Amino acid sequence: MMSREFAPPIPVFKLYGEGQDWLTPDLLHCETIPKRSRLYHWEIKPHRHADLCQLLYVHAGQAEIEVEGQRRLITDSALQVVPPLYVHGFRFSEDIDGHVITLAAPLVSELKALLGASGEVLASPANFPAGADRDYLNGLVSALQCEYSQSLPGRDLALHSLINVLVVWVSRQMIQRSSAAQTVERGRDYFNGFTRLVEAQFRSQPSVEQLAYATGISVAHLNNVCRDMAGQSALQIIHQRLLLEAKRNLIYTSMTVSQVSDSLGFADPAYFSRFFRRLAGLSPRAFRQVGSAQPEFNAGR
Image (cartoon, rainbow, N blue to C red; front, side, top):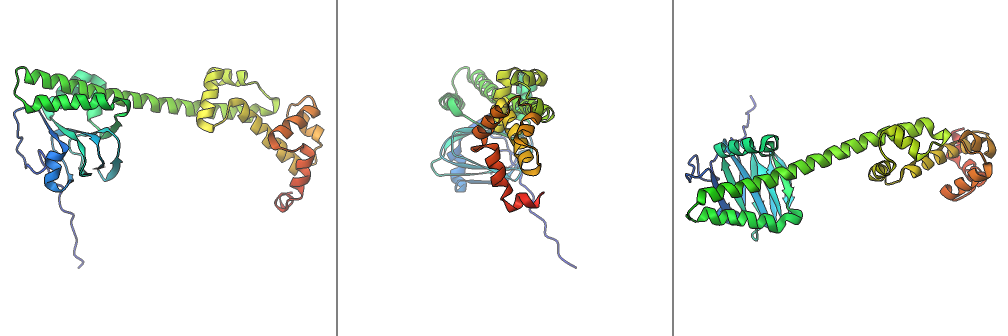
């Protein structure tokens, strides 16, 4: 009988290395990344928290973050959300600068209630680059660390105020990301609708205005979508489809240049020839001669 190997269970901690004891009467805990990671040679091995949410803020240095087996290398200022029960581990460079903020379940519930739908940002792992907010975010987290480390009047109120502002920043990042994703998805739908219309109507040479109207967006919006999705304007896409069909007719049919021009909606063969030369770099007749001499084209006849 073959022996079966079992992976060791993932440890569950309150704070890494601290067993099941919550070290503070506060509903949050804040410490610098070096304070704990230095004790473990800059590596926090995979573990999970049963009822704690963590916000890992990296201000400088490098961090390799692993959440549920997915790894991410952080080289710029960013904030990582690690919800309860998600297996996670970290590896830091020795020049790391940042903080780990741990939120107890009652505080997480309170924050979710205050944020409404945006509170779901604390329910899924996510990484948010600080970007232009780097100094703002660092100042906010540093203020939180300062308040946490002292016992000044109003400390509890100050801590709650600061963590509220921090979580609002995180929720806004999620909203922006979601909005951007929706914009891309809508753009993809518009682009697919536009290309279907081009395929159905290119022989009649519809105007960009007509296709934009049929797609349901403005000409400017359509051009932006086409550039985002295909790197070309709407008119360039129409012209490329006409050019492709012209090339196919010139190589695979015996149609005259005039007939090809007429089949593609050009009223004047001379204009068609200028159009073709401008896009293909040679005249229709020259293209036919070159193409017909190619073995792969002849084999397809």
